Image: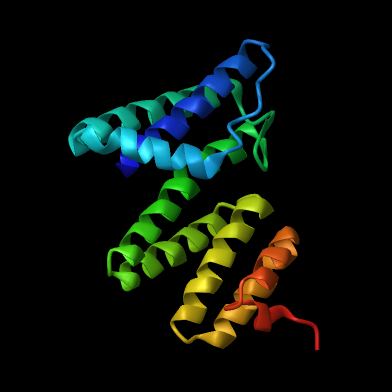
Length: 184
């Protein structure tokens, strides 16, 4: 279940923030993300939606309280460089990305596209870190291209790769996007 998976990521971040708060070296977060995600989705299959939602909400409230206590300070968590960046990635961007993909894969691409668009818009308003906003714009560019909105996709992809140059390599490897960014 998706909420179980989100809760587990939030718990990992909570533990890292606690260690940082207590002056303990924070170990690197898990690196085998695809295998970890698959395992957690299987593990969460037996948990009710209500239970998973309550647990996830509880953990996010703890994260917010920790952040209020600690403030925005250096904290390395994947591409995040601060406690605030990590909190936004794990508690806002990550779940919304999964929700959008869930709707698209479940046959409701319009709802998924709306979530991707709202996420990018909210991250813009929040002046999110380039690594997070760039990825959100990249995801939105992919969806705009799927909807036949090539011009908008091209603009979004250009902005995404200016924020996150590493996404250029990803886009070039994607046959659906490569033509939008290849040099003439």
